[in-house]
Image (cartoon, rainbow, N blue to C red):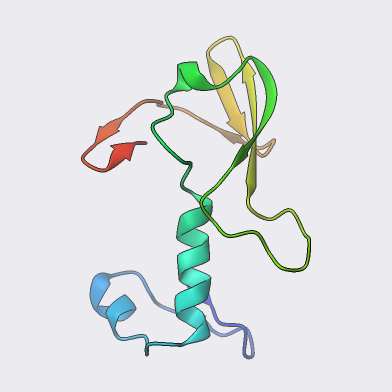
Length: 102
């Protein structure tokens, strides 16, 4: 689901056909792009690459012009356990994919 800024209506963008149907130049394209890029770190990072303790990991999402730090993921590593943004626990790390590591 993607929230559109005009009226906060939900739009089903859950498959390629729906995403491709979004008109070029639509604010929804920018929003979707930023959501996806927020979930991408630069380079290949395995769980072992995260330092023990807390760290800030910049994402591929462009920084907001408002100065709000909205393109950083905060990681916390204790032993081999990693949490992101204080609430999301990585259950299975280092899953190899054709376009990187999940």
